Length: 184
Image 1 (cartoon, rainbow, N blue to C red):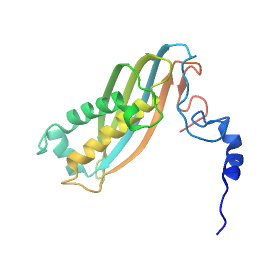
Image 2 (image 1 turned 180 degrees about the vertical axis):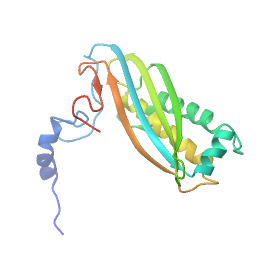
Image 3 (image 1 turned 45 degrees about the vertical axis):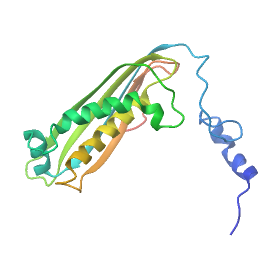
């Protein structure tokens, strides 16, 4: 078995260091210094889906779920996750959020064996770094909460499509999925 040396690892990472802001010149992880950046209004919007059985969706929408208002609890969980992202993701900065909201849409195609719940999170701040991670954490946590509250009747649920839709503010300005040819 061939061993990889630390020097080879650093050499292999040289190209990536210029592009990955969380790596220093030696390839070690570090928190990015945002002290020299200007504060600005920043916003991020993310989305994701959970696929579930149509009957599970019916229970969720009818309020017939034993654990209570599934989407209401998921909304609060997502907002809490946005507020605590820096505690979950090691190199994220702690940010003072000025806004966090989550919206849900449900869909079920006639005759389909599956239904879906879409979660969209919008997070805003006035800070030196963006809130993309907070929006993504909000979506993922809301979907995990739906899974947790519905797993007794549907363990086959699947979360997918968790992605950033839009970000605004900061040096890089505005980015929208599909607007620059990036992401579908």
